[in-house]
Image (cartoon, rainbow, N blue to C red):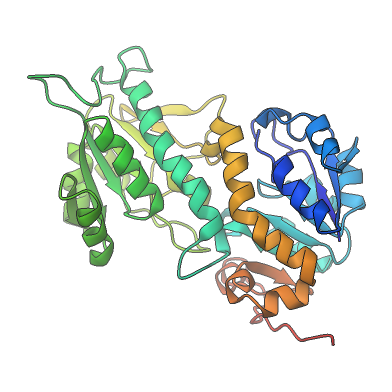
Length: 373
């Protein structure tokens, strides 16, 4: 199969979909890989590293798209990239259609693109590709919050996350006990912060209790406990995920108004719309704004801050799925892996994700893949 890896459109998206090791695996299996020149620069992978393992370097995005049967990306499609897709191609990428543009999904339907979203692929009731990016985002949430708690940082509270002898540590309140929330809790606890995790799933809270041996406070989520937690927080981390759907606003603007002056919000759910009412998308170059005296950090592609680690993580998590489609063909790969099939959002001109179809008022058809043998 011919596989294209374009350079990401956004200047602030430094990740690449596959590291040289992943490209090497594809080429060893007999596939042809086209890598756009400069696609790995942000992750410190030179063109020569890809050409040394057998990739063909192409010099325009149009060529990376145009030569491929399968396009492998990191970030959701831009309008320009959607237009570059060719009839019947396979796309592996983050999709985030729940907060995307209708015209992009309509283009995919018109061109009969099979679009597979990293954030939708399932395995054993987990999201294995998203998992690696969530681990990174959870750690970064604490690293970033420390920076903005400093006195010099846009009016931060001027407190040390872990405190010192005789001075209390910061209170880190995490809404959501999934991968992001658990990873953030581990990072915050390791720095000596007081950590509170709020979730509506009692089983998840039990796992947090067990994992951290009751060093983290767990709280059952309801409007009363959330509002109390928000008011208490020096750092509030939004880590809510509903698979394939827009994140609900768990924290209202009225709750944000009760927060301490200079407190920090890190809304990791922003790539799905945000779970805090006052959140709006920001960028790596202009990451924060202040609303109601509270610092908001709402960057949807946080892992791009550590692009090399993130690119390796994405490569490790996604490569087996990409190899499966390349080695076995799309039909056989989907028939043999229900979790991969769960990642398919558009297929042969129809929307195969019910949540997305509902959001955009599109016809929904359950994915049915028939053998061509």
